[in-house]
Amino acid sequence: MNTLSLIKVKNSLSVLAFLLCTLTSCNSWREVVYFQDLDDVQLHSKLTETDVKIRPGDQITIMVFGADKYLIMPYNQTLNSVSENNLGSGGTRDAQSPYDVDENGDILFPVLGKIHVSGMSTVELGRYLHNRLDETIKDMTLFIAIENFRINVLGEVNNPGAFQIKNNTCTFLEALALAGDMKLSANRHAVKLIRMEEGRVRHYTFDMTKSDLLDSRELFLQQNDVIYVPPVGSKAEDGRSNTAFRSWVLGGISAVLSLVSVLIAVSK
Image 1 (cartoon, rainbow, N blue to C red):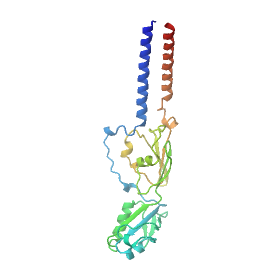
Image 2: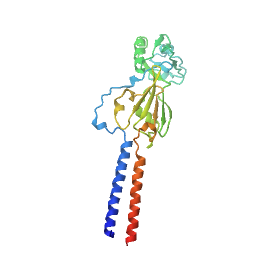
Image 3: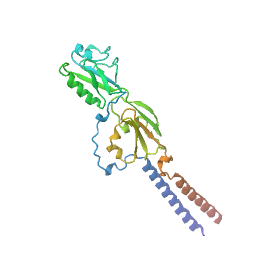
Image 4: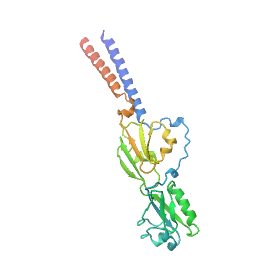
């Protein structure tokens, strides 16, 4: 084999190596990007924050505000630090004590007595209280929050942990954002949601490279939900990773290129 032929062989192998590296990069890109089919599907979800329901064991803050501070005082468990100037426009919630939802799903509300709140959203509870109190308290506004609304994100994320939710609603994507997003080592094809429903533990699996989650009831999280992001290469991946094969091919090409270089040097 003459020198010109060896150079052609080397150039051909170099092109092959470049194409393989490009293909590997493309495959890696496909493993990382979210919702790759979003432009090709039509979403039908009409979910709202009202999907977050009050449950037995929850702690609920309920604050009643109105133009007459003496009328609203009986409807608040404690109201030690609401300024007189703010009573009609929101006030503060420094000294407000939460209501404990008992095992039957009830709270004991001042004046109105026992109210069954389990299964209601905060919006629905607000509507119910507004209807009950509207004739008594003029220009009434309500603040209602689930104080023990926490979600947990574990596994291959940058900031795993438990997160307190302040606004009564949190989506799956917001939870991942709170946890600093998934690492490159995360298996985006098998992200788990673990949830307690009706006394039973249920789990759901989502492929984050597809848009199914955006059309799912599980897009909005519930109290104490757990998101688990497994690593690439785990048994949960079901053989999707072909990193070892790529390394073997690249190693083989590298060896061939080295051999060709030796032959060129010897033939000179």
